[in-house]
View 1 (cartoon, rainbow, N blue to C red):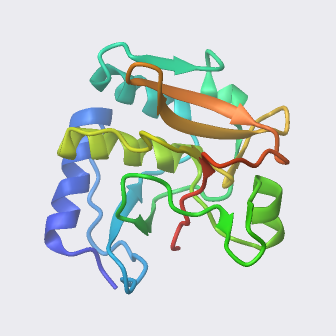
View 2 (cartoon, one colour; view 1 turned 180 degrees about the horizontal axis):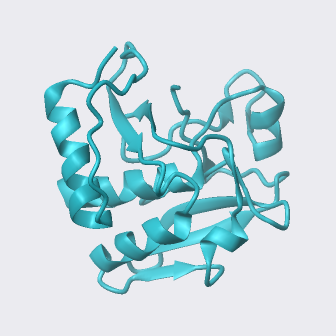
View 3 (cartoon, rainbow, N blue to C red; view 1 turned 90 degrees about the vertical axis):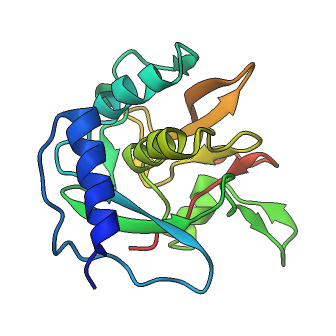
Length: 191
């Protein structure tokens, strides 16, 4: 399946305007639509493993309301499940929806997610998604929950996360793989 024309132009414009990358995504294969509303995230090879590059662009739109646990996220978060130029889909909701097991009545940790082989977003994907969401909808993602990006891994073995916290500030933080709680959630990546 190919990205429809409006999606091609939307992502071409984003990467050209925000990252100075000229690229045509014509012909890029994307996952099929689901039975629920989804949005497409297109990753360019120049940013797919470079969260600091994305953070530098994203935080300009946040009017200095930004905090990240490390000065250089490229060094702090070197491992990502996907790289290159590709597209994924995520549920088109403002809050990360996945992370509570109804049958067991328990919150899931990153380790639980990995054990179940659930595919979730990487930190670069979540940052690009958050930037595009803010750019287009003038609202932040994850205003009440914390998106844990189990598709990425920090150099120290922890798992990165993103949320809106304390007076509208975007936080890029990290959690131990065993951490689980009511606000810790995941975005499933449809690949």
